[in-house]
Structures are given as C-alpha cells and as structure tokens.
Image (cartoon, rainbow, N blue to C red; front, side, top):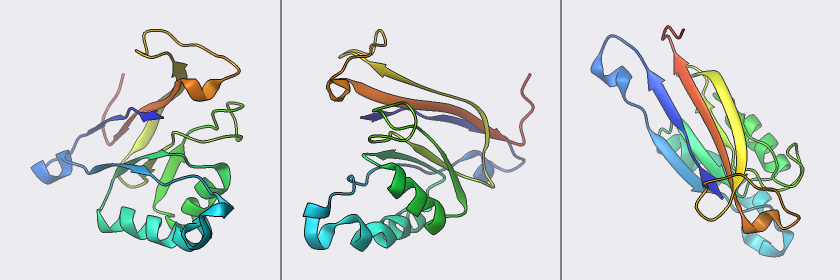
Length: 144
C-alpha cells in the first residue's frame, strides 16, 4: 500500500509553517499474532503517534475496526480513507489521519494503480496493485 499526502499551512510565525508527517504500517488485526495482536498494541500505536507529535499520519494495513479504535484513542485526529476491497469499509485502508486543529479537509480521493501508477485499474486481485489515498488540507488559508 502507498500513501500520498500533501498539506499547506499558513500562519504568522515560521514554526506554524512546519508540521510532522509520519508513515505507520500498523499491521492488520490478526488474532494469530498472539501477544502482538491488535488489542494488545492499539494503545502503543496511539502513544507512538503522540510521542512523535505527528500532525499528518499515513497508515497502512489498517482495518475498519482499527480505524475506529484509533478514533477513540486519538480524538485530536480525524481521518480519511476507505477499505480497498469494496471502496467503503471492507479490507485494508491506506488511511490518512490529520490533527483537527491544524488542518481542514479541502479535497480527497483514492485510486488503485498498476506497477508505475500511470493508470488506475481494478481487478479481482486488488492486492496486486497499490492503493493510494490522497488529500489536500489547509487551516487558515484562503483557497479560491
């Protein structure tokens, strides 16, 4: 899975122009993972995101239930993304989380692409492609 994110912030001081971006493969919820199963690591995932003071987070391998868990664990974030199996809630997400106070969603999208992402494709074997979520976000900027 791949993540592409772009963001823009506008503010009066130079610190407000920077933000932290994090990519995080959280591994899907697999009960066969034993002590490393999702219920035992969801707090660690949330704490890792907080520790690194991420403003934008690209998540790989997240399932719907994991996104719901992270929404509860990280209420300061909102997220966009869909499951790759049905374009809604089934399958793994290439989701993007953003800090609510820093960003406002302006546009979002998703595509599945071939080896070089030159053209979208849909096949029964979606796992063979790369699922990409994208968004443009801004907070406090005037956009025409």
